[in-house]
Length: 137
Image 1 (cartoon, one colour):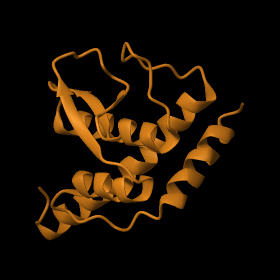
Image 2 (cartoon, one colour):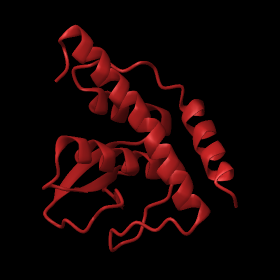
Image 3 (tube, rainbow, N blue to C red):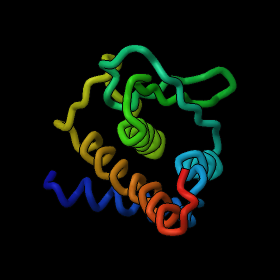
Image 4 (cartoon, rainbow, N blue to C red):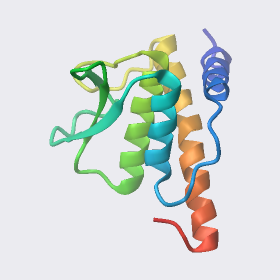
């Protein structure tokens, strides 16, 4: 599959979510809320001391929810990136490797990578709007 296939699939998936403009106070939290509503299950972010979890791996939670596992010792930007990878995994139902490593060798992993970039754009745009208006968190 060429690069265009996963990129096109990611754009279509994000477009299909119909994500509204996010507020600048907590755009990542708002994005999680939008995806919970669209996907029909709860999504929580769980920080781990395991710094090798780089792929936004997913874990099932009691009651049908999903947890996105992210390293605790990351900058705010890195945290947002890892959460967006996890959200992309939720969209595509791709839990990721158990060892937390990133693997771009399969079409679904490439699609997850593009989807995370597109989801991150919503969060970044909200931060930029907040910075222009003095309301960014």
